[in-house]
Length: 194
Ligand code: ADP
Ligand code: NI
Image (tube, rainbow, N blue to C red):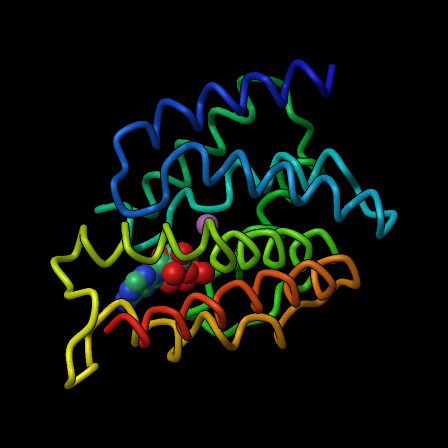
């Protein structure tokens, strides 16, 4: 039953995020769901909620949707239509309500903290570097400039290099250290070449 529901959610999310060019495509949702599942197992958290919330976490993001409230309502209607229980829908909603870095909030459930960790892990390391340049390119930002402001390289200092210290779970902290080192090496090489 839950496996079938996850497959249905997967299809729903794939459809919504197929054409994204800002680094928030379907495969970001899939990686976050997979990572959230792995962390959930190591934390004895609710694996189903973490995986479902991982897939759904960017639905209603104000950067990505012109009408976030409507998009969230559509999501809930969809979850009801595939027979997710009211408790599961509530748990998913709680898990995704405060994910965003820009809002600077800590999710109130363990499952929310896990999805936030998974989302942040996908913003750092090799994938994170790729996503940052995809995002910057989609907004017309320069790779780098001597003024620094508004460039994608500056985003590493504004945000990405801070993420390793903001992880909640043990596994995410461990993985973040490795991914952080990849970014540091990358930046060293970048400035040598620059
Ligand atoms: P959140 O959804 O947690 O608020 P963001 O949407 O800010 O996080 O970040 C999601 C992805 O977009 C990350 O991979 C991040 O690096 C990238 N991103 C966000 N803002 C910028 C920016 N100004 N320059 C480059 N990449 C960015
Ligand atoms: Ni995300």
